[in-house]
Length: 119
Image (cartoon, rainbow, N blue to C red; front, side, top):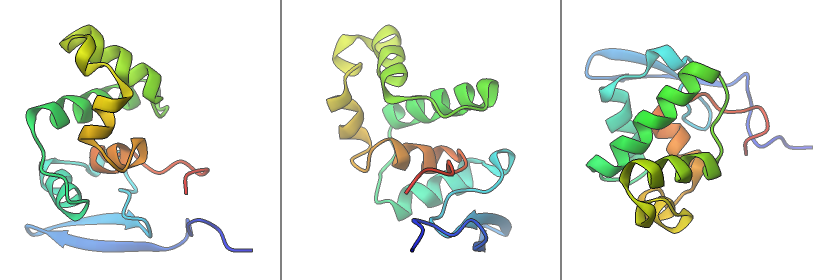
């Protein structure tokens, strides 16, 4: 039976003279290795042109994961967006406008390690 990803398979990439260790789905292995360079590289790879709105979500994801060590669910993210930026930006539709690939695309760009159950 095929697995959705191989946790043993890793790749090292170099961006702007810095090395990053990623899994086979391009998720950063170590949360603390994330910086703006890898963020921008991953966003580019995902064909996302980062705006201030994207960066707000990425910042919230990193802050929440950094404090809880848990992947925030979309309901929590949209509630926070609504609280901070108004109800029109606190919707799943708005979130998917920013990240058409969904929550996992946002996790990837935010440098949040892949969950074992993610495919």
